[in-house]
Image 1 (cartoon, each protein chain N blue to C red):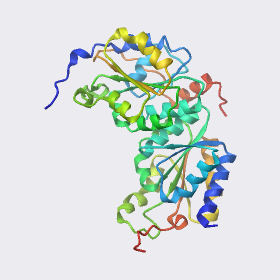
Image 2 (image 1 turned 180 degrees about the horizontal axis):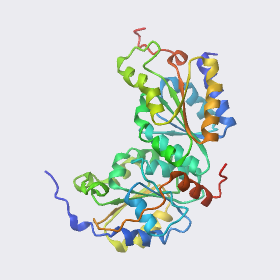
Image 3 (image 1 turned 45 degrees about the horizontal axis):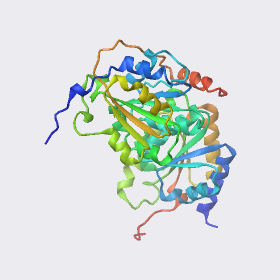
Image 4 (image 1 turned 45 degrees about the vertical axis):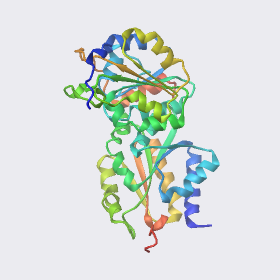
Amino acid sequence: MTATPDKSANRIKRRPFMADLLSRRGTALVVPGLGSPTWDCFAAGDQGEYLYSWGGMGLAVPTALGVALSQPGRRVLCVTGDGEMLMGIGSLAVVADQAPDNLAILVLDNESFGETGRQRGLTSNHADIAAVAKAFGVRQTRTITEQGAVAELADLLFKAAGPVLAVAKIAITDDPWRLPEKDGATIAYRFRSALGLEQG
Amino acid sequence: MSRASNWSEDVLRAMQARKIVTVCTIPDGGLTQLLKLIEASKSARLVTLSTEEEGVGIATGCWLAGARAMVAMQSSGVGNCINALGLPAAFRAPCLLLVTMRGQWGEFNPWQVPMGQAVRPALEAVGVKCYPVDKPEEVGETFAAAADFAFNSRVSAAVLVSQRVIGVKGFGQE
């Protein structure tokens, strides 16, 4: 039996949703994965505390884990998509094993490979990323389908004891291109400067 | 004391001197002694991975956030890391790999040969400087030089520890 994807459940519009969520981040560091999560963060307002990515699909969670382990006093939010999360799905087992209490992961799940032509993704059928995260031992998991859940979601992602993971079922929308700095050395310099690190 | 424990102790000392505080790994037989020493010394956090490429992401994230890490793996794991190594390269961040080799000196298992033979050309193709070492007494200083090269020049480097150093696995068919 094949489940029929219920596209009506994907109502959240990513750009206003992410802008609202990021306005509540406080001092959290943000590690967005390649593609739309990076464009969304930049569109919400350029910040040195955003570690933009243009590549390395599957590595958003590992990169954020490295940041979280090395900055235990700072909240770290990883923002990724369903395709990237599935490519690096085992990294959720590593996150659960290390159990950093400052790490939160948000998966923007549009059930598609949005960047490459909106081909069908695996979460459009059976795959349930929040269920996998829970089974791996991530402390708290949640799936949201409504824009109005942002306040409650911000509490989970920015305040609750980590590691936590939320899946936001988002709509496929036509958003204007918003492309941040693409030179990695510049992105790294800005991020390390925002952390007050020496550049030597 | 065996030669294996000597080179592992040398590497641990070099790690400690350079404040490498996170070691990401998919274990290998050749790394057994070093991983035990790291765990006992408590001078570094061990991060057990599900696939080696995660270690490249974690080590890069650590450096971007102000701490030093490395990834320790068997040569077969290098193949899993190739695309991931573009991440530290793009950030101009260091990534230090410690690789225990299979598929070369006296290999018993033919399934280890293709990747083992491809390790160095594959790493060099993505810009990782390779430091092969085949004498136990030279592993410590080679590791130290590779680490200094990586962290000071902000590039990726791999220490390739020969099967000649770690011993040939024979599954009773030696």
